Length: 106
Image (cartoon, rainbow, N blue to C red; front, side):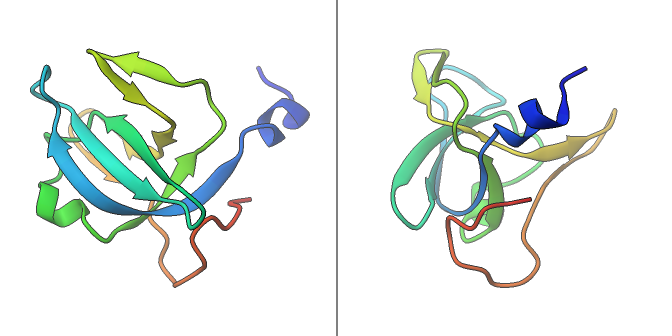
């Protein structure tokens, strides 16, 4: 189990989804553009079975920002959006009130 100090190393920030496109090589993945306030990042997310592209645009979500980049089916991902999932449902972790993009999630 990770220690609290290890958990604190993960930089989680607020970001806004500005674009959502189908992944060119996967049926269940989207390629998202997310705005952290200081930069735009590309994130591959396995949420296509749960959200339409139109539902995603404009959502303020939580991004794990400082995890290693990954290439997922040929597309680079520069972070991970947080979500809760059970056997049948998935829900993105969203920000309920307006805060500045890039705000640290604690």
